[in-house]
Image 1 (spheres, rainbow, N blue to C red):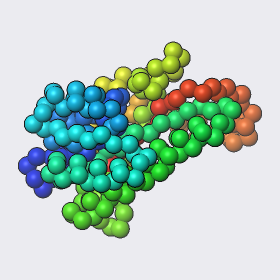
Image 2: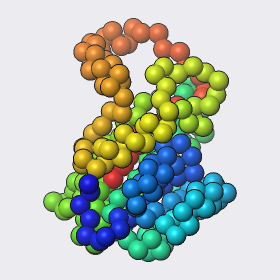
Image 3: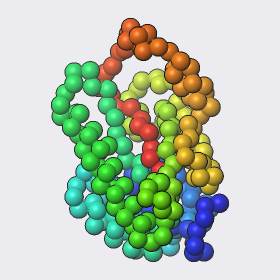
Length: 226
């Protein structure tokens, strides 16, 4: 299990309104964690909170907005601290026309939003003796990079048939197992691990010659867990 100083372990999950974040929250609840969950949709947060009102605090926040930082700090305070921080709010789009609005919206969430939330979590860990986020400054802070591949979430609910599609419940169980073992990087499905191994063996010149078809539908992004 994760190394914790208190009897009850505490986790903050950003992006817990659906998909992987929601399923990981359910798995941690089964293990007795106290949670702070955040996202943009209040009804979804309240629905999850109703399953264990004594163990869950909620916060409505948008990672692209400056007020997300004080809202996160407030959520951490209400939970009573934080041992684990999970950021599962990334988005991604196939943008064949290179529409700048799509690219900028993605960057605001995946770059600006990630930095805002990760920096806030890191400062909390540094001030409170450690946790699971990132290995920096020789502190007791760990980082786990989750690479889930295609997961059957709302993000991929576009009628297309994605290869090796996985159920979020299965992915969440694998994520929690990786956290318990302090894994640095984890590829969720063994089939993806094999595919990635062989991908790396393909010369760059061959990649350049491959026909790649893209549309403008979202695809699942990697989850950063710490």
